[in-house]
Image 1 (cartoon, helix red, strand yellow):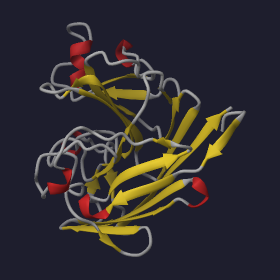
Image 2 (tube, rainbow, N blue to C red; image 1 turned 180 degrees about the horizontal axis):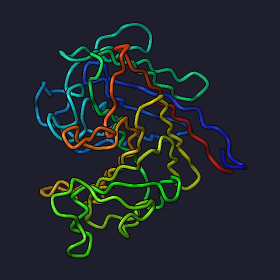
Image 3 (spheres, rainbow, N blue to C red; image 1 turned 90 degrees about the vertical axis):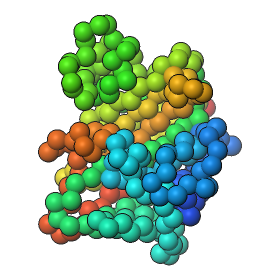
Image 4 (cartoon, one colour; image 1 turned 60 degrees about the vertical axis):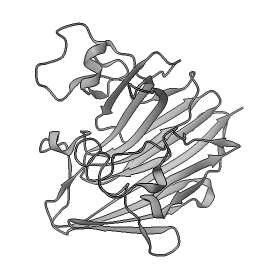
Length: 279
């Protein structure tokens, strides 16, 4: 915690019927979750195209790729007790329990599947941030830029047919990513490898996000859309996304780039979110 800062209690709300989506993360008079301009989220059916409504979407077993943003965001989850939801698919069962006692939001996950089952999971959190906001992560963290960043680099920089280009945080390949700034018409995605804890700093507010999971690759994905996407009607959206795995698309994930269910047939992880405000 920063010296001179006090904890701001957080409260969370979610929508079980529509993908278990987190619809609110509020504390100290501030709503941290951004709400998007796209309509029709409540009318989504399985296998529909993704609707960018904002909030926090549960992405499993992939983020990009097929199906876009995974299988579980477009399906209803069922209640299994206070704060607990379950969704069952042909190859896995995911259980999530959220508590916010003490003002710290804790989300505990359990995925049951056949041993060896590979997946990528991300808490696709889109945040409402000012142009002064920044992302605080350890300097030097290996960071994978994804192909949309190629247009922002000098010609010939991007390796031929490569799914990503790796550089050091906060400026992989010379692109400064830790500050968000005003809209500049760009949009890019990146993954900070072996980076389970980050802080979002926005003026006097600080949001800390931490992911715990033994023996699995833990990353933080970044979606920095400063009015560069979608092409037909661009808007601003900032995603800071705790991730199990190291690639947006499960199809691109090598042996060390995806989470793998162990011999027990079960894997658990915990997401913790807290907020502080400086004086």
